View 1 (cartoon, one colour):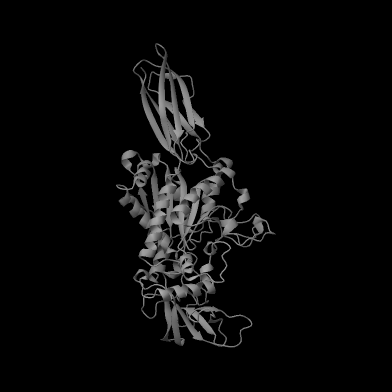
View 2 (view 1 turned 60 degrees about the vertical axis):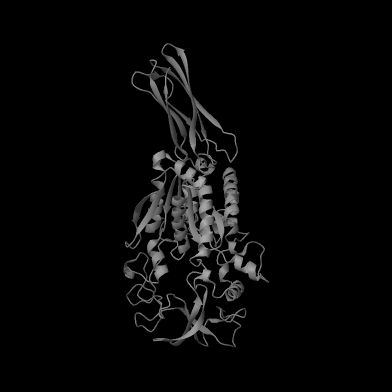
Length: 544
């Protein structure tokens, strides 16, 4: 492993670290097929950064005893950007910012006092959590849930009787203006909506984040890193929450998908479901609320400027996002009742916020109260606290590591192990080119015919159909290198549009090239095979 920084994060406090893993005894990293993983593009989705860290551990410790890991590191190179937003992740995990909020990119003065980000959430009772605060107020926007009185739901227009509440994130009036948390600091620096692909609709009506694509510093660093390593053919970005493997497109329907690529995505991700239990979804078709009467460019719910759309559409890379962690198993244990299950509920983002879902989760937590595997995470019952500005309030709610991230310990480890196993299986589907045979035939005293045969022994083709469709796929080539005194009238390089993968079968597609050579007996010629995404190989032959 090599460990290096690809640059500092948006506020300049922390490095964005990359772990590069490969057996350098079997060749340089630049000559091998490559796969890229990252985590924690979204600041609060810290499980992504922990799964990438566990993947580093799994690969290093598994090299000796797990054959697939050894094969992977002997033949490929893995790049793991552990936390794409390290400053935001640290702020979420500690509840504090250690930079000047006014200097952070995108900082706002939300209360108009001439200062930026000076009044945000804090842990005021010292329990290590930033929970919710509630206070009875006849004009409050919240009320207790009929499903479970510990839960709060939005007050309806028809609600006139009962107790209503004002609700805040836990915190103080840090700027002494009589308001609590009204000017929080910016703590997330990648939106995953600022990448170039489909950043805006043609008419500009709908668009992603920022004033222009790649305005976000951290996102630009990730793009620059990937583009600087053209041998990367796959990218995987770990997010939370839903328990699902997502593929492109985010902004277009599957009807636009190149057919061969759609088959390949489906086949590889079927292995993901087998190893992780997570289902597979198209972001546009299955993970987005779509109005069937509107064309794609007029859909208000579509996500624009998404990372895997850029990687696949612009760069022709096999691009995935995995939404880690799901509460579905807890509902399976307690029972779904009237909660709809027409498709996996947690394949739809934000469904963990449904009151009926949270009520079932509360029953599960009650049943498992005191379970050591939870590590104290779950739900904190409301307790009275004297607030210096608001007076008597109640503090309670779900803890940091529950709805969107798992508790540290066994619940995390089960997901991390499954994801690491799939990461290895996925990475081993990259193309891998080999010279199979070089044959020399003598034509006359100094005349020779050299024929080389090569194949792509990997699962996937050396370029995706999308890359060929938009004209960015580099051709693969067999090249002969001759010493001084040897010559050929044939082109020294023979190109192939792409080399077909095995798709898991036993047959190989053979690609060959021949050269007529004039050279003295005993001359050494070198045959090189180069594929941008499939790696390199070479052979030396002696003319005899």
